[in-house]
Length: 249
Image (tube, rainbow, N blue to C red):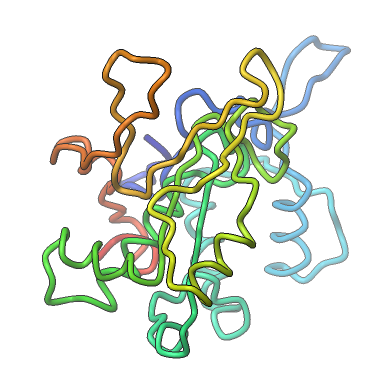
């Protein structure tokens, strides 16, 4: 799943099945010819033109653009802005030692940022901070200050985008964790805000555990560790970009 370069190497992950339709990459419609054509998203075009090419334009042409072009843009951006826009720095030791806590959540129906990008970052932090631990040991150690939650049905940014159970008390959960030592094993008060199940609370399991239903719709499902095969699907080998922060190490 995702994008591959011309040498067959996995460049980056794609969107989860069942997301909003990846509207950021849906293209544009030509009413004259009744056809769709590829077009850059607003922020994507601005990033390439204004930040990478340093030209005052928001009309990026995609003529001749291939997966290899995207790969070159990714490397160019990394080389040019790592020192100022390093959003995937995996060493959080100073933050941890200062008493910081992270509740990180990502909608599984996100149509702008692939959900697995958060899974990859979470795993890079684990590998960086607990390199001698097993996967299970490192995940448990990381969970002492950093927990990741994947929200089924939740889209990008807005709780009105989908009928997913969005967390409603995140600030309170952080305060309880930092000031009272009460860690969120689940994101409590993850409430569905619209649709047939409006008002229903659906607790969200901390990654990598996933909910397991026992056939009783009135009982909250148990959070269980997935099997090895299911876990492996969360960590594709990204071998096109030679940088560990992109999940290639």
